[in-house]
Structures are given as structure tokens and as C-alpha cells.
Image (cartoon, rainbow, N blue to C red):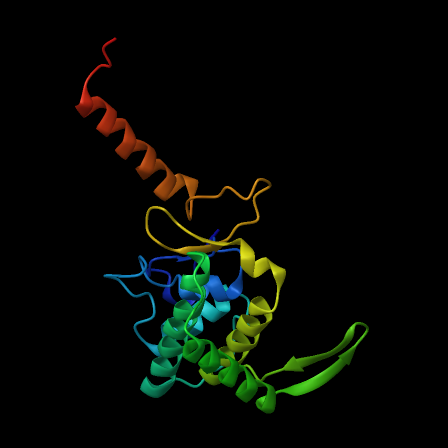
Length: 199
């Protein structure tokens, strides 16, 4: 699923094909583990992504600056260091997991709590990138504690992460229409180059 924002409509649309808020945030670059394009180049990009993801309302002022941008990008890379290895069926380094857990604990201290029919839930103000990071850190720890984390995978084409919700848990690409088509074309050209099969 692609989403554009009205305030910066000329930008490349954000992609939300990871099936989880945290995974979509990790995928705000054009490939993993290495990338040549970053979709979060300033604080406004982070805000636009958060609005497209439904974390912020479409209106209202949000505090910006270079430090909040650096904090958001640092969190994103920390999250990749945790979930990237899990998607590859490896165990992440304890130190990087601890960083995410400590960031989530900081978020819990900053939250206010609202009672609802299914219990209390944390709430954060929508006026800063810090609160966006609070929400993402909390969601990351929730994913770590969920059985769903076992369904993390990475695209065979670009390395983006995704939560595999397919029926047979056989998803290979971030998108069948992008990396899936490229992979099929690559294999087709390889067969063509190899020539006809002789008996």
C-alpha cells in the first residue's frame, strides 16, 4: 500500500507493505542492509511518514529540528539491527535489543494512561518527533514479545523486511509487483541466455 501526503506531494510515496508499523518505519530506505536513498532526510519527512502511517493527525504543528531527525534515524537503524537478524533466523546482539527496550521504557515514563474496556493504554502527545519515537519503541517491544515475530522475513530482491501474513507463510518479496516481477524477469533472462535445453 502506498500513501502520499498533501503537504509534500512531489516526494516519492511512502510504502506500507511491511504489515507492521515498526517494519514500515525500518523500510524508509531503498534497500537493506545497504541503501543509496533515504526517505527521511529532514524532520518534515519523519512527520509526513508518521501522518501517512496514521500516527499523527493530518493537521497541527509538530516540533522539528536536526536533533529530532537524528534521534528518529538512530532509532530506525537500531530497530533494523534487532529485526533484521530475526528475519534472517539469527539472534540479534543483546546490546541492540537492550537499546530498544531502554527506549521503550523511556516511552512508558513519558506516557499518560487512559482506561478503556480492554484495560489501560499509553498515550503520547502528537506535537513532537520524540512522541513518534515513543510510539515506535513501544510497538517494537510489543512485536518482540509477540509470536508474530517468528513470521518476519526479508525480501529476496531488496532486503526490505516484512511480516509474513500469507496463508502458507511463503512470502519472498516486499511486493510481487516490484521485486517479484524483477526476480521473475531476471530468471527468465538467465534461461534465455543459457539457450534451449537439449536431451
